[in-house]
Amino acid sequence: MDGIVSRRSDTPPIFKAVISATYKENLAYRSQMAISIFTQPIYFLVQYFIWQSVFKISDTVSGFTLDQMLLYFAISSLSGFLNWDSAGTELQDLIQTGKFITFQIRPVSHIYYSFFQKVGNRILAFWVEMVPVIFFYILFGIDLIPAKPFWTVISFSISFVLSFLVSYTVGTIAFWLVKTDGVRRSILLFTQIFSGLFLPLNLFPKGFQKILFYLPFQFITYVPTRVYIGSYELAGITMPIPQIVFLQAIMVVIMFLVNRFIWSMGIKRFTGVGS
Amino acid sequence: MMQVISQNTREKMKGLRYSGFGVYIQGIKSSLASRMAYRGDFIMSMFIMMIVELGGPVITLIIYNNGASFPGWGVYEVLLLQGIFLLSRGISFPFFMGIVWNTISRVQEGTFDLLLIKPRSILLMSIASAFDSEDLGKLIGGILVFGIAMKNLPAQPLHNWITFFIFFIFSILLMFAFGLFMAGLGIVWIGNYRIYDIFMTVMEFGMYPKSIFTKSFQTITTYIIPISLLASYPASALLGKPNTNVLLALASAIVFFLAGLWFYFRMVANYTSSGG
Image 1: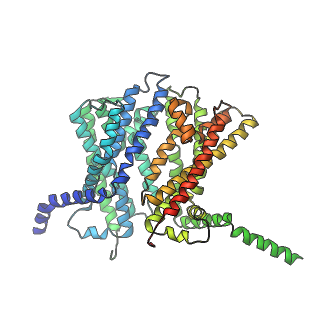
Image 2: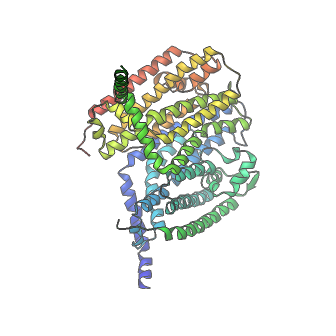
Image 3: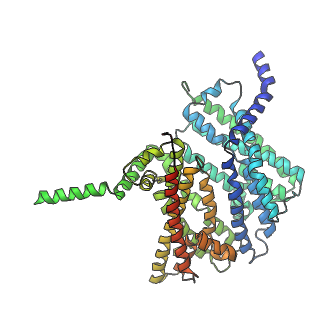
């Protein structure tokens, strides 16, 4: 009982330490992160040329004007920076090498440890990657003022947690498989496509949009980006912003429960010696 | 007499085995053998590589399905261009582009020295020990898109095909030059796998018709970093569309390739290590 109490009272400093340590550790590799300052503007320029060319022929594509389309790509890229994490990969590595055993004896739950590692990593990414890219968008003339600032903050925060949960859940596959690179890459790819990172989901065929509506992926990029723009529509379904953000929050709860369920089954299979 | 012939054949086979090509084939065999230890993962990874490659064509299809288009280009013409781009990538990535990750990881671990002390060119050894079998998925993706596009386009005359093949060779040459630049960078920029990101993003310009870019960008992508030669020029040649300043573009590709070779060997010469 004492152990539980002291563990609870120690919890905030531990996570603060995890955030701080991850931040410092990643700071040593900031030049790798900074490559986004070069790559993202180029990627955006390509998108700009593609869509400028497309919009020469039609004024709107699936309800988007050229400015809205560019805003979508700008915001979805920022969402991509914010949500990026390597929790799944690191968990798989820990399980496969057996190093995960050290977490079994630490007074901290691995899921929270991993989440706060992401927080530390993304705080650094905010300064190194996001701020310069935001400046680029502003110089490019993209109007970055969100339509509903309050809901935008809430929605992006939820997507931050949800993307972590998806990645972490994918990582638990390592409890069952010896080599997981292929499965991880495939799930990552489908997550990126179905989240709307590469293309607004309402451009996909209508039947496919209906499937996408019921999957958790749209809540990672598409929903926060649409909340930022100020309107939501998918598969012909339109919703007020607070309602879709509420659904996003429910999805986080569902994903958390799914993760804990899979985790409880997987952890029984884990064996490690020494490490 | 028979014995002499068979001895000659054996000598020839031995010569072939120890030639640059033989070393390269041996590298492919070893790579495939080690990858086959995890067949399921290999097949899955190859499948994913193929799906990843289809991203660009899918975006094109979605654009055209939404009633929009690239001016002057039909949907299958754009798919042909993208198919050529993917074919070029599908040949480069498994067969020689592995030089990039191989160099980065070996320099980081200190095992690049092991290649340097071998009695063969460092370039050959870096390529031969980096065959990336998973990337064959890219080639399958390229063949698929190219095939679908060709099936839906009218048959092209022989001279278009000949011009296309010449341009396609330059496309591969250009990919090789990119590989040399990245591998060279990997020697000095230790452990930075995001060098790939720089390359992949710049390559995005090659995946769409040259005409969608502004004049200044067209100049950059034709003469400075001749990305237009990756797919836009070969596709236009195959479709019989006019290509302007062809000779200048080809010359620029040769200069780019020579610059890549110079850069790579310069970086190798500058490489220092403490033995790994």
